[in-house]
Length: 538
Image (cartoon, rainbow, N blue to C red; front, side):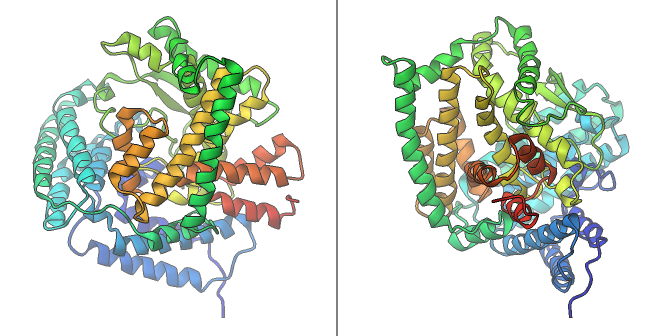
């Protein structure tokens, strides 16, 4: 006989999760774990699996709640626990050196970001002092384990960079205190030692296999399609959009290829660095005005565009250091900071990299204004408690990957949405958006074919280059894909899912988008089911 669902189990779930992921807790806004490092000892996975089994057993005995928030919470916990359990067995994070380097780095950096102000000095020092034991445990756990070479190289880059940060640039932080210096120096030594250990690990195939990827797609993302079916859909879209790019380019300039027209957008940029900085906010405000009939923007929640703090400028390059990071859902404050990276020695490269089309589409729409910024603000009011924090940006990616089809699907979809605002984009910028869409379809192919064994790492990188990714990004993208199966297919599949729901929505455009974002960070497929349950779809 089913038991009544008790909402308090969310607290039990989070306590279990944070015990093994304390850095995630910091990013989410819980201060209870700020001085704690992740656990990496010999019995950790056993303990974690025992906790997962206990929670699964409790949840499976309960009836499906009638309330929307409780219903989504229960569903998300069951999905996350199922995948965490499978991953702990098939792809344990404790066998990934880049998990250790990322957690160790952001254990410190998470406490230094504006969202953590004022600095909790005691917690920071406790984590600095805990780095040595954590990385020693990491080295011991990795001893004799075969690890994909790209994972090792990423971990080494992050460790070396973090060692340098702790010796030098951390002193540039506006709240740096002398009492940080000694533990920071010891932590720096620990990072360097860990990097050297990784030279001796054997190489391994990074593919997770079709069965594990299928589990992620069905449980985490709520998708009914198989990996092979997703390949067919993405390949057809990729081929079709290749033809569309050619046709669109001919309409813009018959003598130029679409590649030449897109490349030419880099020539259209602000006059100097200060004008670049101002353009971020300018296009943010313009996007909000242009889209006011399409989606209600989060103007009550501030977005502060500012030059990146000097202490982070070097370390931001080798780490997963986001210029816009989701605010801590449990302690969001009044607004969020958006870093603008200042120019280096190559000012022309800086200006071209911050051309008007890039600032407009990626920074001010995808991440700012009506993109992730509005989405994150709306999630704070979601009925589901977990949907308020599932999309938190953590050390390696989203806290709960299942939120990704809505999160990344929305941010990519809203880029195209503003094509419905007359005059917002130029024809060349619309061509650029088509290239973005095609690259997202390409990412589905990479994500799936890499993990089901159809493509090697080299073949995946070759396809990324063919699809138009910047050469400097290709290797890093593929390594990240290999570590996080199911994390790149969610962009294009998310966009297509939103388009389908919009076609079935009974109301107007504005009400659809506002309703969509009101659910918070949960799988898009579940939102569709809830909309259908509420009688809102044809």
